[in-house]
Image 1: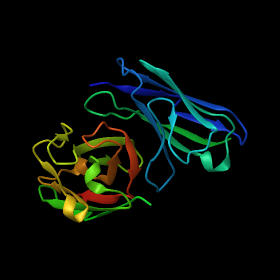
Image 2 (image 1 turned 90 degrees about the vertical axis):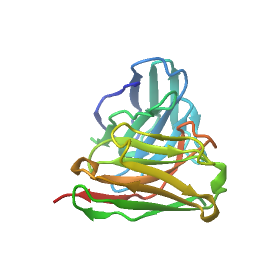
Image 3 (image 1 turned 180 degrees about the horizontal axis):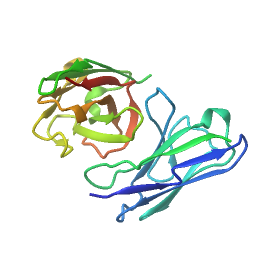
Image 4 (image 1 turned 135 degrees about the horizontal axis):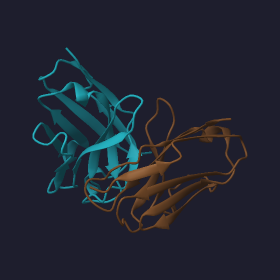
Length: 107
Length: 121
């Protein structure tokens, strides 16, 4: 199975900050990576798929990059509604595993 | 608007069974694969099972293989998860999830609100 790791596990940031979250796969997953946002008590929401394609309706302050084993999610200017947990997920091979999550909270 | 509404969760004793349902609307149900993903409260996400548009391709996580059965009824826009021989470690929120592809390529674009399954004696 392809294992996924994320760093950091948590980050404290202020509104307006640039936040960078990294995701690493244990083997090459090409560009088959998705990012999800989950707020407390809510279902996950797809932000980005195919490593860098923004899902419809997602604000442009979110961006994704990377290929192979190393990927990045960037929030260019953190907004109050962005405080949440972010998960990466590989879609290259079975089973589709998720990363452990990165919690973004208020500094 | 895509809507996925799960039902059937609840509290059950170890070894018993439970059947989850998901009612889908707002999209052409039989054009897409569907999945169940679970999450232990306060923890991460675990894919459980997936089914292609025509039920021709079905997969399970090793943790549930042989105990859970996924199925779908395209005529009624519904997805199901039959869970047998439940264990305490199956306790989780179970999400009904839509795939972006018909056969299933594990890109999950819409999620239901989840239904809680608690397995405890």
